[in-house]
Image 1: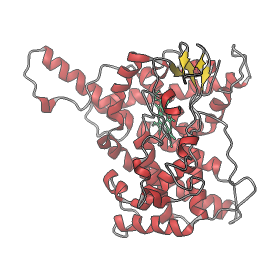
Image 2: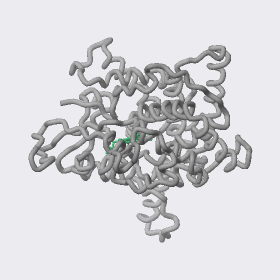
Image 3: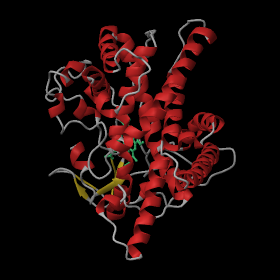
Image 4: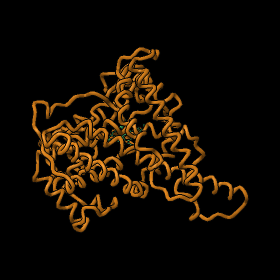
Length: 410
Ligand code: HEM
């Protein structure tokens, strides 16, 4: 039934709180529906191809090297080896990783730090119940101020990337890759218009129209918005689950060392990341066992006959859950156990109908390959560079539903 809802774009569209329009801006692509949404999204697909993802890996390695050093310092120096709650640090790590992957070195460290700190205000502004007008010093007011700051930062980066790419700079982040393709597309069209014969080889990998700095910025903001809570949750569970299962972490460490020929600092590419069966299995199983996005709110655009006996009336919220499909014992035997082997010797990869971690249908996650490669890179590097323990508490396995991808409204 969840699949049916995700795959019924003529009946439903994603449901968002009113504050989301104000923070992300009403003209943001993510609020488009139907053909307009499909067309815009097509223009973004090229930013997440395998060859594009490979180009973002070096900058991501840099962030992990930097943050893992910070983690050791926080644990060993600041807290003298005593247990310390790490989720806030994982959130900061993932926020910094997103900012650098999206904007490379155009963004200053201070700006990244500010976005990491203020991101909580943006999430807080997107609560279910919110006053429709933004009054000074309310959660929505602080959230809007923070969102404006993020948009301004991304816009500045877009402008800098346009200058550097026009001068022939080497692309190393999503922004550069996008801008380079925009500029190549413009040149390609100009040459065609001038009647020049242009071969297919000279055609840019993505044929794009012009995008203003602000439009690019709004789109990058949707990437940050869509990834931040989900990736931070996955990251936290991965560290916890691995600490609880050192024998599995050993296998991850072993294959990460092997693929780098024993040199823990050797860079790797996407193909190499994906050859590591334990690293992949651990990430897949964490996402199945503790899915970061449990519910995705949709709204019925018209009366929606969900079953033979029930029709959701126009305007009602219809919320597919990913959890039940991912914990379905027929697809994944012993669903309440963490069993990475099911992705190696079992048939978990064949259960494509149940694999709803990233949704399905026209709004399925644009960053799903990126997100999984990032988590594999992260846990692989962590396994070689860090040693960590989990202090088990009564709350260790508690699951709180505190945010969904686009929190909801009536
Ligand atoms: C573990 C991490 C992540 C999880 C579990 C996740 C999950 C999801 C889910 C469940 C949806 C809704 C799908 C639907 O309605 O069918 C979604 C949408 C989306 N995700 Fe992700 N996501 C993750 C990371 C990311 C990252 C890293 C990015 C971008 C860099 C991203 C970009 C998006 C976008 C843009 C959408 C909206 C697509 C649309 O409306 O067309 N996500 N994600």
